[in-house]
Length: 320
Ligand SMILES: [Mg+2]
Image 1 (cartoon, helix red, strand yellow):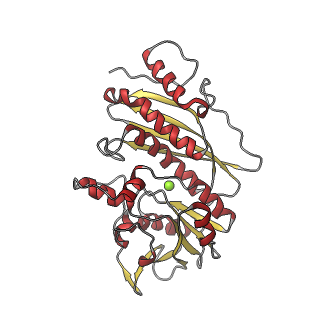
Image 2 (tube, rainbow, N blue to C red):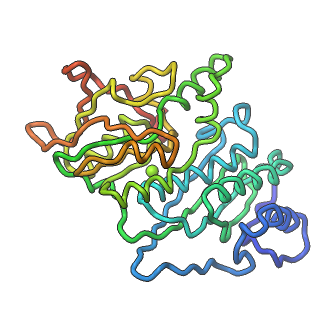
Image 3 (cartoon, rainbow, N blue to C red):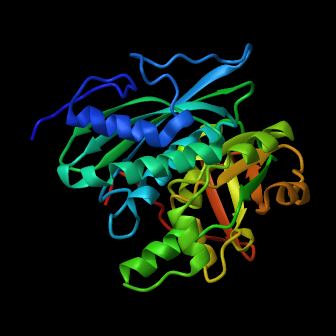
């Protein structure tokens, strides 16, 4: 197999590979910006900071071909990367996409490109460059670039802060469980698995109204709360039964469900949950509080009826 690397460019020379890249760029149309140059050039609004994040989706690890169409896979990869910008309350400036493509996936590249376009269009952003190479397994590595005036961070929680979560959890895990058993997942759960949305506008709305800390849920609520607690050096007490979840999902399953791309946010004051759900059509639910450290170090206390209960394990990308 020949390995090849190139910048995606609209003004490319002859050759089958360049034809593929040209065809992908044609699918993106106006959503592809400045692809003809060696690097992307972006203006950041005066006073803002540049925000950058990179995320890889690998066949067999982050997705299965039997469960998702090529278009779903492309859309999901971009949305997962954009979710990290949402966690920072950043406005996207664009993405760079590096595709590693086995021969058997070549015929699906334009469908993947359409999925990438779906995500760019939903987020109102563009692709500013990328790379394509041959590989043994399909992977999509997305660099998401954005700008922000005042970022939400994992370290922004203080003792006494209220903890909220957007949306309803459990859909991805319920879907994976059903598909693994050869069963048909409920429609709402399947939609949350196939087409998660980065909460970009939601996060900017929350940051403008007093939120100071955030993380997006990729590993599962319990695990991502631990990351938040560790970064902020606090304990987080969560009411298990308050965790918002889809019908048919237990509170415990909602705590471990990963790749949700909902947001956990912290704020010193009360956030306008009614205004939020009116604006975005999804709930914003208060699930707990940050508390100061006592004898225990940073961590999460999951409470059920006044009793501390064990936290089910979350997803760790480096373990099996
Ligand atoms: Mg993240």
